[in-house]
Length: 282
Image (cartoon, rainbow, N blue to C red; front, side, top):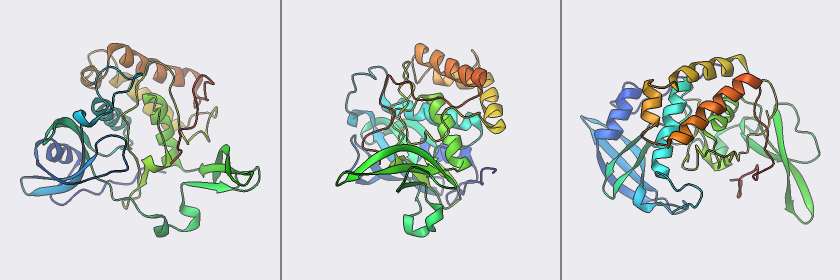
């Protein structure tokens, strides 16, 4: 299943233009997303007649995390976007690091996700099902307590778009892939957001997309990881940019994770050293 074309914002003709709009445009704060654990501001950004909605996460609004003492969550969000772009899959909305009304922060294109009622029942991404079998078109994740002593099987769609995201998450060592971080967009893509807790040197992978754990990688994934290996080589533009956003040890760990996946040819499995499922899962 080839990735669909991204729909540009009015006045924006390509991904480079979107990055320029986000990086150079005038930011106007519209409101705050209060459900977030850190400061997340909904903004509009305008530049040379083009405009779009975006999310601005100022570094000053980040809560310190004991296990991510270096850099900022904003820098990690930008690094995740750059790695996503290097795969050719376009799994993360355009993201830049820039100054804003409340100082330096991450600015990311807003994605207006389809609501559940917009999709047929078989078009969902996550579900709870009775019994011990996921059923056709679904991949099992784990059993979950749903109240009154009853359990249900948590499943996700056996969807190549989600499978690409599971590969990206393994590369960037995503510690927080929740259901609410999956955005099905009108352009047919599924975007991943909220990549602040990524790139740790230790195995921190926590995700709802374990359905392919231990399975062979697709040929598409192997080709993307092979291309990414070249992009991560010392002196390559991606490696040079990542070195400005994450530590040298974290960059080395990215290279090793990519190399390990190519050596084994398989999706990673939970390490057992860290909770494999994020909480809350949505």
